[in-house]
Image 1 (tube, helix red, strand yellow):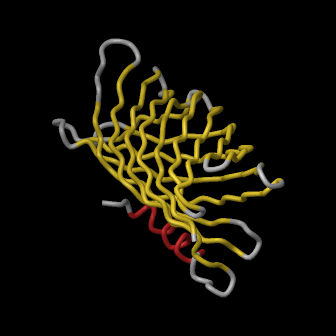
Image 2 (cartoon, rainbow, N blue to C red; image 1 turned 135 degrees about the vertical axis):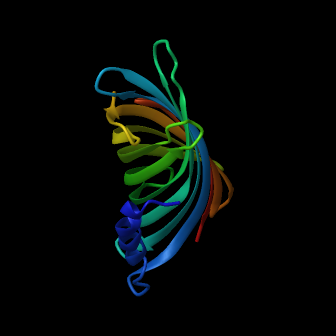
Length: 217
């Protein structure tokens, strides 16, 4: 169940798409991915492994700015970097929005900036003391792309901030991201002018890979 804490975000996100005179729906995508990152707790670092499935819908404004929102499912495993393992598994969901601005630089090159925010919530019901993990994930990313026939290649750099907590009836443990900078590359293979498959790889604050199926209108 999506936490009531993200209902205001959902209302704001939906309202962004409620002015058809100024914007039009321009794309939809489905994304699957997995990532591994380190989190800094008060006394130790832990690893988070995450698997995601998400649906993203986007609209184009009159200024060419793309506004989108996403919703999806999370499967999460946290574990200590040093023994004992003390692993926890969580299942939950996420909801977020993003702003994307693509700029065409001639026939073959393009520049794209993106800001995204995502709220994540999941519960661990497999232990004698159920826990909940919640965190905020914001990212700023910029990339320079080059297109060669049906293939577009976009190296990028990303700044990401993560903050959240794991709580139960006894305690609350706060955490933040250990690193903030990632570098990566995207490969877009165009099946037709308005449909492509994207493979996106991150290395740095998180090691991750995402596969996205995109249809633009």
